[in-house]
Length: 339
Image (cartoon, rainbow, N blue to C red; front, side, top):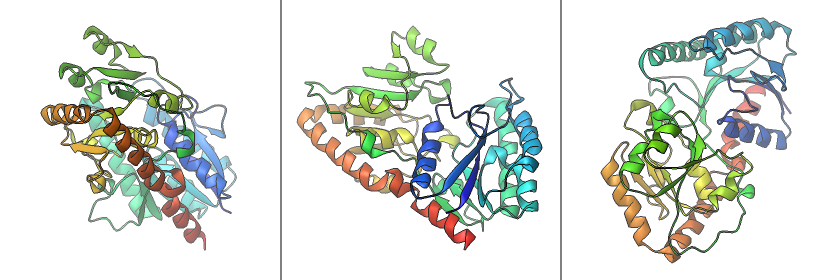
């Protein structure tokens, strides 16, 4: 089976977004592929330095990749995240190594940082359209309808077999948000609605939520997530009405569903086709009124109905969001490109 080099700017030892990358890689390895990494993770594969100094991350990462690429053992195939394309494509093409651009995290910053990142993002995609053999994206939102580049969709999946913790029987449903507590997500809006939400995570908005009288629990490891979600009944994902969120394919919805939770989520890419599911309610991005109403409607159903719908959510996750399903198209693309 093919050997695959995966180049990512994420530190796979600590980064919150490592879950999806590990999930994809492990499923590929189960099918016989060998995965090697190039990343800012010192203990794993090829180490590519990425400065933590504001404004220097991308530049130092690209330079580091350019230095390392001539020294690596040639893989059969390469997965290159958009942040690494500028640094890797010349060496890959000079060795005739087929590669795809992987886009799992488009820029979400604001202000000047957003302008810089968008420029880097567009440059990476322009290079990929010219030199790569295709793309792997989280949803169709990331593919321009005028693009001719072949692509596969790899939604945010989960290992459903790890979400097996028994659920306690509660008199009242627990509202739960687990994930990044960052200012760009504007989580304070949930608090200002008057909802009693259990928040678990870390980020630059923790103090803001604390000032509103909310206690944010410390983040849990990926291994602990299934247990924490077993203690909730309705998972919340309320995102601001900003263009960068429209293309989200949220991992949390997959995790909530796998844990047997009902879900209220902003209507983002990859979910609208499931809008008729009983366990899922989608509301427009940034619509506080609709989100609050949807939450109250779920609470009013009562625990018996919430539990029934939660079981449907888990069935959906097993069928649609287990990694064994999510990577099928990606694996076919890799194998077919080498035949």
